[in-house]
Amino acid sequence: MGILEKIKIYSEKNKDKIAIYSENSKNKSVTYKELWDYSDRLAFYIQNEFKDNKFPIVVYGHKDPFMIVCFLACVKSGRAYCPVDISVPDERVKDIISETKSPVIFSLEKLNFDTENVLSLDEIESIINSTNDKIDESCYVKDDDVFYIIFTSGSTGKPKGVQITADCLNNFLKWSSFLGGENLENKDYVYINQAPFSFDLSVMDLYTSLYTGGTLWCLEKAVQLNYGLLIESLKKSKANVWVSTPSFASLCLALDDFNGKNMSNIKLFLFCGETLPNSTANLLLERFPGAKVINTYGPTESTVAMTEIDVTSEVLNKYSPLPVGKPKNGTYVFIMDEKGRELPEGEKGEIVIVGDTVSVGYFNRPDITNKAFGTKTVNGTSYRLYRTGDEGYFKDGQLFYCGRIDLQIKLHGYRIELEDIENNLMKIKGIKNAVVLPVKKDGIIDSLTAFVVSESKIESSLKSMIALKKELAGFLPSYMVPKKIIFKDKIPMTNNGKVNRKKLMEEL
Ligand code: AMP
Image (cartoon, rainbow, N blue to C red; front, side):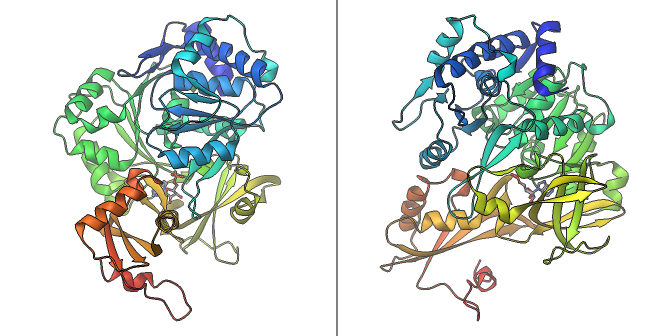
């Protein structure tokens, strides 16, 4: 059964059950029935208004439960949605709008620039309140149709849109609804949502919750930044399932009140997106004796995650770093060398994912799609294949992640192509060349430093650094703006004319 059918059943059986809760948003919550009916009416409006225009629809906002009403309305009308969080800077939002050719923009928060065909939250609500019309089920996105598009950092300086089909999402949910070894369905669980909806980690909490008839408890950015409010909200949530990046959990672990007494219902901690340090997993097991810690791995291009391991104390004692687990049913992981040859257990190579959750490629970008994607037949079935650019190996049947082959990194859970920052730095007037490097603390990437060459000599002063950072923040999300900028006369090169990143590393 697919996600829409599941939500429909809950909307009939558990009408008044809260599906999405977001305390500080305009619409605090929606029940399953409201979610179903409102999205039906909005879908009818979309179909009626835009008929044959099937371009994806941008949904801009933060954590208002009506974000999800809009997502479902788009897919019920047969269109993919593209979630964009308020943390995305204006220039990127503009890029995404023009790239997707979105016929209408559902703008639940105010956009900071003028653009055509925008519907505000008030207008969306009035559409929903002024009709009882229902969309016909025949309009829904089909199995092979794109359900959502999530834009991630792209090396050219423009984000790339990963297209996930309804089939990919449903195959992911069949697995995620059993994470931790039990069927999560009909358990009345409350799921914590930390990630903004424009990050694919949020798919794990949002749709696993809706697929299993749970309640999604959204932590808004303002709550995440205020420790008092955060602990208060977590206590109040009575959450059972936690989904976040390991970085966010370690930030919470710095607070003494983040413990099993204050959150006595927690059963599962689900992690994805970056390395789960042994220390974080260890502390969680200590502070939450009744909970399991599950490490999962995967890129947006393979629908959030596709490997899983229950990090028990035995696993913690046996492995450091921790493995990312075994692939789910329907997914096969190969370790390959540069020539695409499969490597045996124990040997390091590129992690290549083959299976039923691999994306159909990047929106409108056959060039980069062809480079990263392909097909492969396994046991007589042909699947899509994705070359992750991650390095890894198998040991004891478990997959281990070693880092990146290219210049993509993870900083506090955010996926960043260093070249994306470099290209945006070079868009700034007067900047000739730029190289961005990750700075590690205790083996974990902690910040970014940019080396910049300008047309006229600029002193490496605090003032010039602040000015440049401010300009860059106009193009990039704040987490992508390097903490430190060093002005240089020239960038060192290797013998074959490449930027000598190793040499620059020595200057950090
Ligand atoms: P994203 O598309 O934002 O989910 O980022 C995907 C990338 O995050 C992967 O290609 C890996 O480099 C990294 N990643 C995801 N999960 C893990 C994990 N459990 N451990 C280490 N790195 C991870």
